Image (cartoon, rainbow, N blue to C red):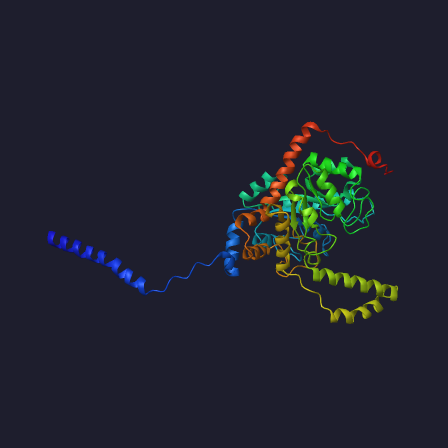
Length: 441
């Protein structure tokens, strides 16, 4: 027994001692191992896998989704949140399965109302839109959680749910009343876009005729009251003068809930470089939108051409839609619509990062508020593809996390902190537009 043991040990040691020699011999004849592939140079599928892992550890917070308006305008059963079943694939761009695939962790639901409505004032429609959004959130408690603070969004995300905030689109909804503004805040609105496409009595819109040289005295008081409340000032849709003056007045970080860079696509709705360069001091965030005409200069130029031709045909054939259509058809057939791509969107994000810094970018797709989409960004399921494109361009994990949601949550937390201080020293404003601007209404 002892001999066998000794023999076994010797034999075993002999084998063990021969292994390094064999391994060395193999290494000497083996080709050098190929260097590891950087994730930026990896395949799309590998980059998507990497992005999905990243988004499992940080919330993706989208700044603007018009689902409540899509529900209002649904061809069948408008305003009916039960009929517009999010557990099934919807006709629009948003439903639960696609939100999950897109890894959305927080959402500002836009409670948009058009600035052109005049039938009964804005309040009725605004309240109806808030009601639609709230009923939608309540209908799917396993998916959505009402959120009012940055902490609420993080808590919902930790539970695997989508923290759901409300964002008002257009200061026309307050009807020149700071009391109405406060009421909307109490109903859950956590940002307000100062204008939509219509210039107000107190603020100029990007796509309308300016009448106020930016913000009036009352407009600046609106900004100050929003700071006191903790409601983020949203400068999407506003003129550059409004953007500049709001940055000068605001004591809290501002946002653009859905916008792009004018230095890449020169259209009035986008943010000029002079404004972007001021964001580091303010702490604000531009949340990149996916509107083709805002992200592609070719698409924007094409749209301008179409508008000019249609205007000329209306003059040529007044009140004759059939003749207008027939005259326009040959041009349209000879000039197909250009396509906006994910690369175009990434170009904007690169530009904003270059001018303002990576801490001042976010995502605001504008899904269900648009009729045409960027190729590859057709609905809420597609966010990871954009992040995979940015990964290829060398964006770091920290930069991608900031873009996903950390930046806008920081801005929201900043607005909350400013509000906590201001509420201790500043009472609710009772100023009126009559007092500050001399307006009769």
